[in-house]
Image (cartoon, rainbow, N blue to C red; front, side, top):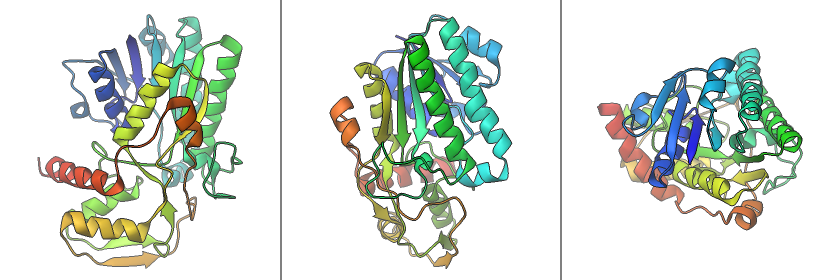
Amino acid sequence: MNILITGGAGFIGSNIVKKGLELGHNITVLDNLSTGYKKNIDESRVEFVEGDIRNRELLFELTKDKDAVFHLAANVGNVKSIESPSDDSTINLLGTINLLDVMVKNNVSKIIYSSTAAGYGEPKYLPVDEEHPMNADSPYGVSKISAEKMILCYSKLYGFQATCLRYFNAYGVNQRFDAYGNVIPIFLRKILNNEPLTVYGDGEQTRDFVNVYDIARANWMAFENNITGYFNVATGEGSSINHLLNILKKISGKEFDVTFSSPRKGEVKHSVANIEKAKHALNFTTEVSLEQGLAEYWNWFIQDTTT
């Protein structure tokens, strides 16, 4: 199959590209390299195009003769979106509309969208299922869920398959340090540099950490199962930040100081997913434990940082 992956040089996108190549697909990657890296992908095996999803003409050309689009290009991060909400919406919502319009014109029959659990906001109950109210606490969550709803609207209007995957806290290979990003690479960088770690809150807040290997599997399961709808992608288990710190001490073999600060705006206290819908519809369950995934990620992180 001929596949377009937007944001395919990024952390999650590059892992989806890798899995797609293993499955024998022909893949075109579109990425503006704002957060992605060419070295994340094997350019000898994919067609790489440097560009932006706000460029409608480019999207039109790239969606010709494609069987499906995996859409990951986005402005990512709660804190970042609070600082620049207009950029967030322009990229995440208007960029998605650009993509949907050209998909319709070129008769692309399938889209798999990388959505987010940030749309749920502070949970009203746990574990969070897909019918939980959407009460996003950041412009990022609002823009991503708005794009998700637009995708499903276009799917009804024009009859193509649309699967929206709501990731919880993703981590793993090809995820590099970003001050706005996930807590795990921030912690790993500080541990590697023998710096103290800062925890925003008391450390008892929970997250559902899901390895990118399992996220990539979920994407290709969605592609193969021809299902329209929205699904949580997570482990179904919550881990506290304090528990995470204990694992990081074990796998790194290092002791480090931890300071606790006030919680940050736009971040929830607890987040754990209900993944029963994905289990039944996609036959999806995770394969990588937190300790196993962190150990692999730590070894990759060291090598990537020192080369």
